[in-house]
Image (cartoon, rainbow, N blue to C red; front, side):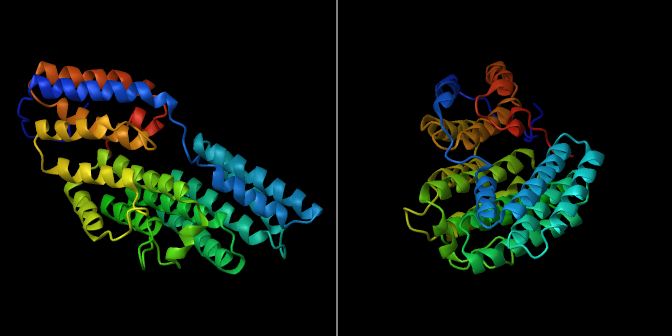
Length: 343
């Protein structure tokens, strides 16, 4: 593992290394029992239910044809078959045109724009990807205002995640981080908080149960943690974390506890020695992966990165054990099972 830290790290005491490794092993053994609160497809499923409830029989057949073609285009883009994806999206666009005048069309158009944005993301066309995501946000905001469709808040969250991905890859980590933190603030009920120029009201989040909001907060902070692992500008990102933590005024019941625990760790680790970082990580890891195993893994990876740099066989042995385990980590996103630093 190529270390981010180029300075020589001081040697770590055997006791600190052992405590860190024990906490890692115990937490890893417990992760298989974790049941995620939120799965990425839940909001698409809810929107599909909303669509079908608004359709006549003929419209329902057209909507289902459109959704199938859209999904085919999305799946082809995910496997990098870009030409097939373009063809499927063209057919989906034709199916969308057949819904002219239908109440279901704006919902379908939002889903279409969101999926097509991913194709342009894979084609290295960030401006078009941003344009499509913002078009989908326009549609969602209008529909949520007019029709009060609660599932649209979750879909808007997914669109913000997409913007974070676009900015992290084609823009810069600070922009991506600020968008993600603004979404966290919105989930926590911050007055005037919004990740995009669209209308975001503190009451919007009440459309989702508190447990799901907490899961979404963990997810958006995981996106930031994954960026942090790949970044060469961690000091800039950490400054953004500090701004959020110090300005957060939400009530204890609204605060995303796991998300803030990771932010607190990242802030403290930025200025800490390796031994201090391991002590911080041990305290974090001992609480277990809980509802945020992805964030738990991010702490492990950040420590393993630093452990690989000292001129110490014991430290490098711990880093090597983590690296060996990593491809088979249970419930870890693929990006963590083989994260690679951006050029």
